[in-house]
Image 1 (tube, rainbow, N blue to C red):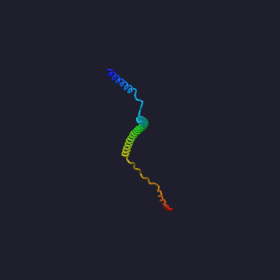
Image 2: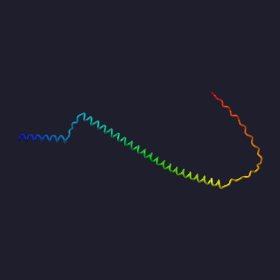
Image 3: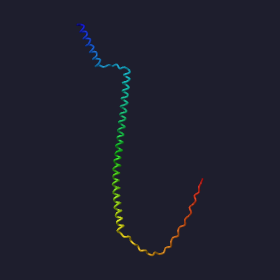
Length: 138
């Protein structure tokens, strides 16, 4: 009986010891594990810095994209306005050409009587000067 009590008390003490170690944690970290933890922390810090930098680049690219999109929209509106103006001018030109051709067909050509004019002596043709010879210099 004493033996069973001692075995039971041993198991109880061992269970309490394991529970206390498991709950309290271990303060000893091997040097290799500490090095690995520091390396992971530095990699995490580098990744965080890169993420911030990429987010800043993304924000600037988004702003540039919005600026360019507004320019495209403005140029599209200007293009539509110019197209409307061109079509209007073409129709005005076509209408003006039609009126011109109708007025040319409707009005008979005027015959102007030839008046005998005072005789004017024909002008003598101007003398042509010989072109100056170009001289080459060496």
